[in-house]
Image (cartoon, rainbow, N blue to C red; front, side):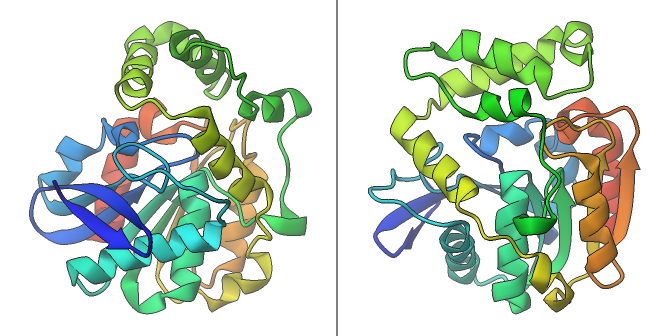
Length: 264
């Protein structure tokens, strides 16, 4: 069971394939299972490291509040334990928050940076509508399946889950396979809500950067991706027209292709 002891807790990760190393960092309340449409295609040519964040999946539970910066230090510790040198890093949503901190705090560990449906945070952020932000506040008593079926269709382009019920079924399966305790979710959410942001530090990022964002993202609006791409030196913005927050799911083939092209 591949794990890394980082301070007082242990992080779990899977490894797939051979080639240049590429690390996947999932979003708020999610586990490494989020990347089910990426593992097989990407691992054909890359060494894919698929991580469970602190408090998620098979990583150990937190016991006190923590920050996005501390989660970035977790990732740095995993990479240092693997002794791979610099790696390509893909961060999705909250995983993008973590990846940004990692690239700023530990530039020697990041060869190329891919930021998906994410934001710089802080005063430059463009926020979701109140009814969408309210989706982040989980109800203690709500069962997993109805919660997933209630929330995820509202994060994609309108009608996506009606057209692709198999994806919604898979999201339910993922959540039931690796359930997250409400206390763990609240710790991750607190880290997100207390985040100071990195908008004033984006110019410190030296890794070649690809920003991927759906232009109908209801949770982290498209303007946030535009801002990141404009303020990281020489960053490239790839706009996924008619795609919501779940780009790696909604447009998996194109997403996988662009990741491979950028890495290679």
